[in-house]
Structures are given as C-alpha cells and as structure tokens.
Image (cartoon, rainbow, N blue to C red):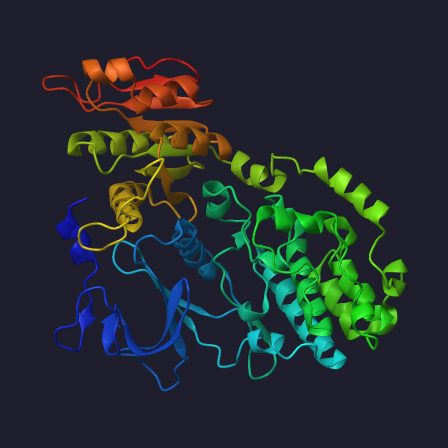
Length: 511
C-alpha cells in the first residue's frame, strides 16, 4: 500500500490549528463526532466523551467514543478484539448493553461510538469485599438477568467481571466490552486466529481453558466467581498467570464460602458452588434459572454443596486430576461446525507488500468469480506479517505507525472492490493478519485450523532460485488439505488469466 495513501487515510477535521495527524485532542471532529474530554486511558483503548455535531432535536443521548491504542508492538489480539466488538455491538439491543451509534474502520480511524452509561462499574466494590449478603444477592440477580438477555440475542460474553458491568440509575445491569465475545451469527475471529485461552484469568471457565467459546454457561461460571469474591473477599481460584495455573480449576475445589464466612447461608453456598462446577451440565443451565434462585432462596434445593465445609480430600483431588488429563473436549466444535457447514470457507491469501499490481488485480478477480458462484460462501482474507524467529522485530514503520495495522489496512483496501461488487453482508467477509516467521506454514495452519474449503493465492514469476528453494505457493499446494487455486498474473501477449491453476489437495502446482 502506498504510504501516502495510508497517511491521508488517518487525517481528521480539527478545530484547533497545528494538531498532528493521528493525535486525538479536545475539539477534534472525527466524522460527525466532536471530542470533548478524555474520560479514561486503558491498556487497550482510550475513552472519550463526545457530542454529535449538527445534532437535530433537543434530547441528546450522552455518548462516548472508544478508540483503540495503536502504537506498534501491541498484542495483535487487542486489534482483533476491537474488530470483534465493532462487529458485535450493532447486533445487540435493549437495556442491558450500551446503545450502538457508529463505528470507524481501520482504513481511516477505528472507533466505536456508543451510549454513555452514567453509572459506575462494579470494579471498586471488589476492594470493599466481603459485601453484605443482601447486596451480593442483589448484584447476582441483576447481572444474571442481563446475561440472560444477551444470551437470548445469541451472544456469549466470555469476559464477565466487575469492571465490565455498569449499573444504570434505575439499577439495571449493563454489560460492556465485547472484545472477547462470541456471537452465533458472526465469525469468531479470536478463535480462528489465536491458540491460547481468551479471557481474564480469575474468571475463565474450565471450557474456555480448553478452547471452547460457544457455551453460555461459561458466563455463569464467571458470575459464580464474582459472587464468591463478593461473599468471601477471596478469589476461588486465585489469580493465575499461566495456562498451567488456569488448568488447576479443572480438578481443584475452591474453599467452601461458609468456611471463610460464617454468616454465609447454606443456600447461597449452594448457588455459588453450583455455578463453579467444572462440567457445564452440572451448573445452572440458563442465567434465568440462576436469577430466579437468587430472587427466591426458598426454592433452592440444598445438596452436599450447601453443607460442605472443607475442600475435597487429596485422594479425590488426585482422581479429578487424573481424569482431567483425558478430558479434553472434542476438537470439532459442534456449534461452530454447524454454522460453517452451511457455507464453504474461501481463504484468499494476499501478499499486499510484495505482489505486483497486476497479480493483486488478477487474484482479486479470481476470488470474486469464485465467491460469486457460492452464494453462501464466507471469504477470509489473510495476510502474513513475517517476523524473525529469534531476536526483536521492528514493529513500527519509519513514521512510527504499527506495521500490523498498516498491513490490515492494505488488506481491506484490496478486498473493497469484491465487497462492493458482491454486496457481502457483515460476517461474510473477514480479515486476518497473522504474525509468523514461516509464511507458508502460517497459511497452512490457519486453513487447517479453520476448516477452509478452498485457498486462493498468488504466485510471483518463476525463477531458478525459487525452483530450487521452493516457493510459498508450492508449499501450500503440497501440504494443504483443501483445494488450492494458484493465480499468476497474465504474461505479456498471453490470454488474461491463462496461467491460473486450481490444484486438488496434496498435488503439485501446474504452473
């Protein structure tokens, strides 16, 4: 992508003279929103109070703008997570989530404008734990109601924690921050691109640790962790910072709440420990059932959980550990597979940095024709940012801009004509920038892990050196488990596209 084009795409309107492009400041106007005041600086985003310019009418909804922090060198998951939130928020509605207003793309300025919830989050209450029992019950009931509403909208939040819960003035619980969430009707970009558990350590469910992201009962486990902390002042599984530490919750019982707090009623311990069961089928099956028990304790059926005062014995813990070793979940991810089976996955591997203009155009036209013949197809556009195997990489360009984001922008510019020509709705077209030292291996692994049905990629002109060492396209063709189409730019005097070749799995390229 032309650096000048990238630079121009980040220009804004600015009421104040002399502000540097890309730096946000009060008074600046981004699209139709004026920045008023910076409210919060987080590790992944800035939160700005904004107003809508030229707004019609007397009643104005208070607004905030969420802008990702992009300096270069940040975790790629934060960039993908912001894209996930941009996809999910327009799908949600109701009192239990902020109202979505607008969003800006990475090709210019990424942002999300949403309703500003005037209340405060639950985060400060952690420092005051343990809380009064009545308050614990009230918090749990309101949050469970909010989760049930989101689950009915096909969303699993997957990052339920006090800092992501805000209360409206009327007491309605509002869930925020959907960067780790999964929606049944949208692609799960985080699952497709990353191979580590996604979530916040203390609150992650056992199935999240095992890479399962489609079970709404994971949110109930996280709510159980919150209720435990608010009741006892302690976290049931500590604050692990490694996968090994996260896996301990597969076989280690938390200390029963009544052991840590004598006035915890048996029924509340029953509810909390039921939420914290390792196997989802032993938890509450819906957030509505949990809310109902919290609102009417008399109906809670007491089991051995309610009367437990000690952790499981060493022998019992060892047995659970032993069985946990072989209790890995199936890798077919049934619900996701059902969604993917409805339409093929077409993966376009695009080298925006090195391919010629002619090759990029020919590749785009080939992809367009293939998607046109598959009305239900999903198109995943993939680019690989090559990094060193050993040593430090320069993660920013000469102008100090993130190389990862720059490559993402170039990929989106490449695919824009396809999206316009085919009118692809949101969710059918996604973008993925992978970071890896071996380009071919990264493409092959991505295709296999995400069950791609067809890879379309370009190949530069042949040379003696490339024939001796092997090319990325030849490696992908030889090792991929799906059909591969290798696109070559038309040679001078040749028919347009004459060198394109579709290669079945495991075959060698024809060109």
